[in-house]
Amino acid sequence: MTGLSSPAMDLVGYAAFVRLHHHGYEMYAHARLGDGFLAVRVVAQVLCWVELCWGVMLLGDPAAFTWRMLRDAVTVARTGARDSRADRLHRALPDRPADAVLLREGLGLAPRAAAALMGLDEPELYVQLKAAHRMLAGLGVARGAHGLGCGPGSGRGGGWGRGGGA
Image 1 (cartoon, rainbow, N blue to C red):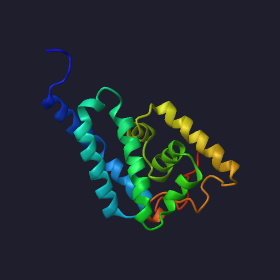
Image 2: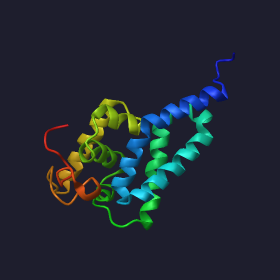
Image 3: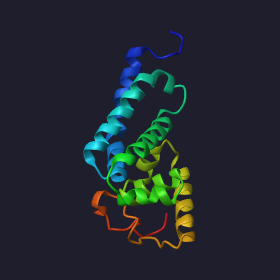
Image 4: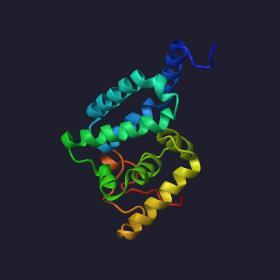
């Protein structure tokens, strides 16, 4: 064997990857789109493309690459979606800090889970969160302020933050 994985092993790895991340991808897409049906469709399309490229993606970081594809696909899908309060973060902040806040504080994911979805190490997630907090403070938005809700219906406290430090 040459050290390259077989197509069968690639498919097993892809299936495990999807099983691990699928729910988080749908939560993220739903929060940004405000439409569960559209979120499911966007995630399915992204994962189909990822499956086609899986062998090549294994040469790099599949989680980081898939996250960028998902974020871009959701941004494109936003053009046809109703207003989502959570997407205000993405209009106010660069992509990575906005994603970090949405996953960690809006959707309540544990730091390790949020970082894994984004294809980051946990310390890098904290860097993105701190950057987001600084930028939002510079815009005059207090942590936990209403108006930058993060979930469908902002059922997690109504604001973009949960309080406490990151």
